[in-house]
Length: 529
Image (cartoon, rainbow, N blue to C red; front, side, top):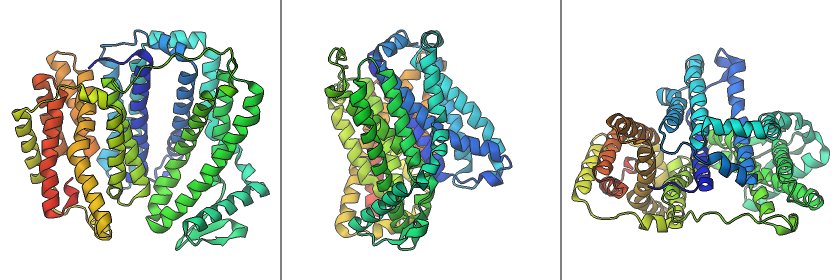
């Protein structure tokens, strides 16, 4: 698999890092429970929880700087350690350490074990960040960039780290009468349009549907979104001050960005109430409320900047047009990474809006279909063919997966599916089978075997063993059933390495999923897949 051009390589690795970050935050928000007051280390616990918002803002700032400095980025990545295995290995080991406490504790409350989890968290974060940065570019390149642009980089880093504090300082803005009243009235209007029949207690800003009520206070007022969007907009103006028209930018972009942030927050609060009333109060409070805010506002800020970047009226006429970027549709590296990123993000969205999360599988299947369609030229260029050994290996994996399946299945999913109308269930079942048998094998094998394994495999026995172990461990962690998924990952790795063709692994994976999917359809036990 060839590597992408330098700017595209940065984009792809950044997409991988974002997918890992989103998966970590979502996993700990949705599947772990711990209370800082019961941890015995309250200050350290609160500090770690606050790093989520700071991490999201830092990712957004880094993306904005890379976007504003494409020439600097290209120079930074020139000779960025291609062929070296140290930094990818360090990064992936760090990600594994970050997941380790969750894997050991499962869904249990491990507040009392916070001190034990702190060491792998800190070590994992350090290894993941250092490995990721030096995977992008060698240490000497980062040092040179820091020496040349130390003022701008220091300012951007301070901005990223202090944005959550700026949001906290801006919290009193919520007490302004017009802003508070307008937000509350808009939420009520959205709920009425949706048919939620809201009940309101206006003096206390309490609103609810059914038995689920929330008080719109500083924490969910959207003031943090206003601060975040303002910070990104100002940073964009500073970075691109030589190309934008400052008066037009100040009079149009910032007001529109703030209006968009306010509107998004109104929709977010209404969605929070509807999720709590109709789906799950715990999901609304612990998942959607605490995780979605910073992510949505960061994405909004980047979307606003994308709109500015694409609007010539806001730029000076003498500003040189950026050279066209490389076409990613035919890039095999992009085809291996970006559909998996889309797969992870779709899983987070399904977990935020559906209980159980598997009920939202049609959404994930649609996202996978669109992602694979986008990279159809690269996928068609792969060496496809029927390999009897791959089919036999896949059949064996399918049989082992069924033999090791838990006997109790997933009662919550069974109840949710039983409550669906017949047409809706038919649509869900069709999406589940198509996604499991066709789409998922392509996306997962391109990423785990076509990218992770191939990237870490240096050719020696030790390097190949490490590559197989790392790709298999990550594959098993994604699927939850560690033993069965680990055995499957080892088989798929062996199938690929036999002829060096990721398509053989895809065929084996598809065969295994075909057997499991047929068994799920015959038994009516959809937890099998």
